[in-house]
Image (cartoon, rainbow, N blue to C red; front, side, top):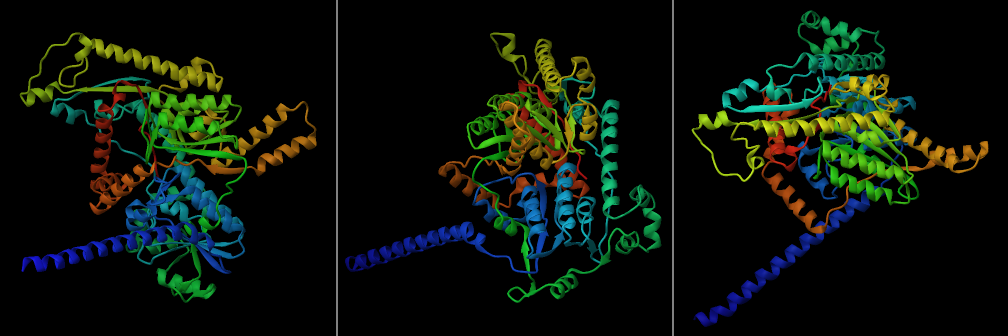
Length: 639
């Protein structure tokens, strides 16, 4: 009986195995076909007449996408928390649409927009203003507006809000957590070693409140930045100077008079032009444009899709744009992180690219490792020695190590709202003997030399070890001052006065001659073109006026390309792909905590801030950089 059944069992097993292989192969082929369609098919669409460009800005405004991998679109599509508004992509679509006769108007949707720093926000503001200047209508709509969303929406020709919405402008300011009492209770003693009276990055660990110097420096910068923000709103909405401050002062009584109707109050104050649910706006756009029966709405195209239809030129000579965004480390990289070694290698390879004629470095960094910053600065210096110009474009934040990077450029261009400076360094060496005593834990052992146990967080800090770290930090600070004085062609004594860890807005930094010019990324690219034209004329013996104009024109026509990360090997890509899949299936618990930092929920924001600061300290103390000086500035400011 068993002998007769065995052949049938084997046939059944083979059938199952064959079916499994066929199913997997079909699934694999479908995945490949879908990927090929995604890469090649989308760019073949044509934009029809009376198309509305839809800018649905959801997520955080960034200078460069966190992940350049082709497969990342799948996870971005499946998880809204990962969405980003990539500034260059939005600006590219706006500029192309302004000249495109098939684009009739633009619709700006701000629900879900998390904003960014003031400098990058202003770049977006200017792009929206350029579109309006072309004579085309732009309509902004939101369920409600916070002050980041409203800064963008105010640039539209018409601002509409839901009848039950609200508009809130809060002003600027920042609070930080101070942990001295908490650490005392735990029995942890933080040893802060710093140079610069205004270098406040380590204060939260050794104090219970901000120092007078920290408050003075922050007030100096925040007052300047708030003035620029309020003036931008007043200019966009044709309000008199000082109107925003006056409205904020009268808000409680004014809202009472409107019986708590915040939307009606915004309308009466002329901050919005109308109150309208989105379905009514959709019907209006259908009437004014063309109805698309396929999806029962007005004819439209998303800004991301439109940017893909208008790719940047990728042949011939070009000016490279390198985006450096995040904290600086000696090595590493990834989202919101800059690896000094890896970035230096990328710059070295760029110098060997014969088609790359100039480099614009977009810096948006609070700094970090002084050694990592020096890796990048020195690589830029070598790049310049190859005869190619370097222009630094400062974004939202280019402070401390972010400013160190800029000291090997031909030109430094900052946005008026950039936070920069913070020329100073610090080190932090916590010890936890008190915590060990509370836990009744003892430690001991033999060391061949005092250095073997000079820094052990379980015991008090050896005075000789503290002396070594102080000497190193003093030396690195002197290097920072010397490099700044040489780069800015200023006396050491004057740089000493401007340094001390003090922060400046971009406009204030220009007044102090710490930067050369005010402007955004466009100004930096224009400066690179001018440097190329000037270099061509210098190389020739007394060029004629016509020849000089010809070279200037050639420099103006050279294309601009963003330098992307090197593609990882196939094994790394598969590993990253499956890692992302696992994170997605697990609900990405770590990312949720990080997002708390920007949450509007006060409790979530507090917990997120404590988590972020504790995580930074733990990672730094656990790394090989814990002995190194930190050229770091915890000084970001977002509207």
